[in-house]
Length: 118
Length: 178
Image 1 (tube, helix red, strand yellow):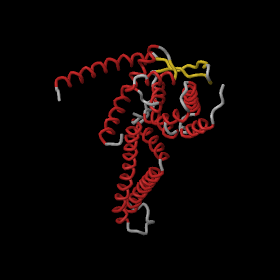
Image 2 (tube, rainbow over the protein chains, first blue to last red):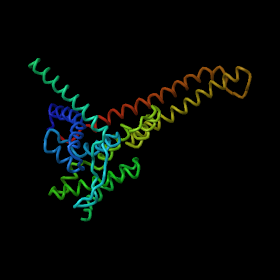
Image 3 (tube, rainbow over the protein chains, first blue to last red):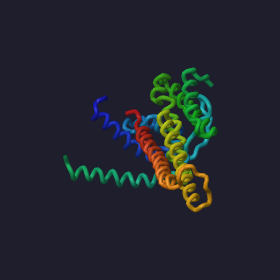
Image 4 (cartoon, each protein chain N blue to C red):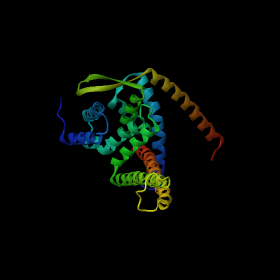
């Protein structure tokens, strides 16, 4: 994994993934509130989205600061109480906006790639 | 409730230290969340070393949190506030940046003060208000602006340097495990 082209791809993927992570997190939490480990595991299930806990956790915190997520505590069977995240009204609005934006962008890219075959 | 493994405890302690710039209630929440993550991962059968390896070094994780709160403040801060926060953040981020920031800051400030003082004293002397200068006032009036310009240049360099570091930090921390 040390040759420059694969390093370049890795970095590009990271950038793209980071941009889309907010969308995926908001969508995940729109279905049901969840907590750290469960969220990370859900993302891990889709390999290209697996972002690493060192990105997901700080991002969750930022989304909370921005008022898009709210937290509440719930007892856990295996340790101290867990911090759950849920979507706020602002979070839902942002999710809608990002979903629309993503749909437009991914369609545009797909069309562009089709119209300009290599 | 299981007691914390010493390796995990050390990791969490190091994380907590790295978060010292964040407010105590928030810091406690973060440490608790990561502690829960470690506990949940182990309960799911993952070995501790692997969990900690995926989390990455505690210092880097702490910086990732700091980046999210400091580089993306929740309340709109004035331009000046943000710049000062960035200076403080990067001054402690590494020794070389600390040295550079302190040098630019001190040189900048000192030169600006000296420049203003020299010009002020020269003008006052010309106007006849004071006559305390050993050096000819013309000399001071000539040198003053250069000192002032040098000081402003140093402070401007400081601001640009700190903004450059902020961009670099954002890009570096965007890289996650692939």
